[in-house]
Length: 154
Image (cartoon, rainbow, N blue to C red; front, side, top):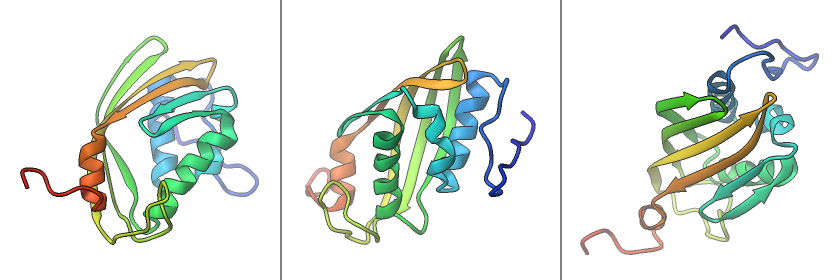
């Protein structure tokens, strides 16, 4: 995939004429750059199913990512570990990492915990936009890392 064009403000513009796989890779790159505003046009009519609840449309989905990044502002990252694409479907196995030292997340005050969590996304991409995404990760593991539950095998 060629480098995305820059907008007048210098931000990366959404790449045009790319495969669903390339669009998902670009999206992860913008998330890792904490540039959620660049992604919003992809979510105009999207539905994202997160373990914590369903988000609909660009503003609602962007609010979720702003909350996550705000909770781990210094080092939040999503690393693609594996990706498979077929037609409009793109499945990604990812690892998330970050230090929970920022704002509250889901009403939970920052604990300073280092979070390392694996998960999967199943995107449906149509006409250069995200139609839906189903996100799965181990919520018990996440809660333990936040300090909400006792350690595993305790």
